[in-house]
Length: 227
Ligand code: CTP
Ligand code: MG
Image (cartoon, rainbow, N blue to C red; front, side, top):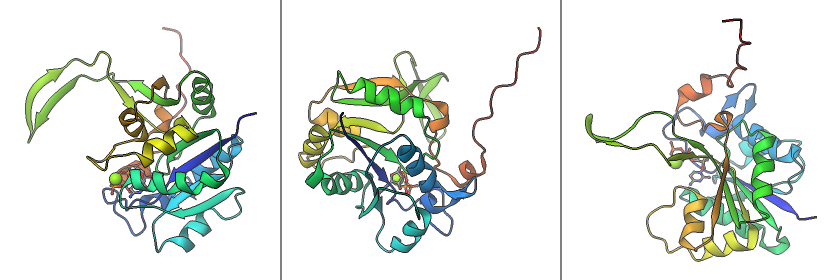
């Protein structure tokens, strides 16, 4: 049996969402966002869950995750990538085989996505959930449309992102400190690791703005009536 641990990054400032607490501690559907994301991982049998938090928010984080088993707090860093690296380092003494790296700000994590990611790790060192872009895409700036971009072959990338733990730890250790990595797949790319795409899920959306907290989960589709 391979062992899978998780990293949940909850050390951001949530500047775009604003509010009195960083968004990962804001309530959504009656619970702090981070509790939703951590609970989904725990209920899938993943342990431990290393949660990267900002300095000064230790008590708030402990209250948000009170009573959950196998949660370990670590301090995050200045950037998302640094927060991931801090949490990966904290796993090194008892290294798991696989690790799922997830944004606290994505409260809905369907079990089927976890299953697809872990299945993909049988044949690749990394796997990420992605959805095809369905809208038309353009490049533009300052309200000006510059050019259309063909959407064929373009995907929106989500988290969790799954990796062989020793490989992604080494990739973070070898990160050259250049431009900020948007996600861990970019860190994997820089280390030459192959990253597979698996089907993501619309429910995995990220809370970015305050208005995202007002949105309920995606409703189930209405039953089709005869047409
Ligand atoms: N994150 C982190 N450490 C950082 C920056 C971000 O752990 N130094 C986490 C956030 O807490 C979030 C996830 O990375 O769960 C995705 O980042 P994002 O949505 O950009 O969150 P914030 O950086 O907090 O928000 P903003 O960019 O609006 O300030
Ligand atoms: Mg950010």
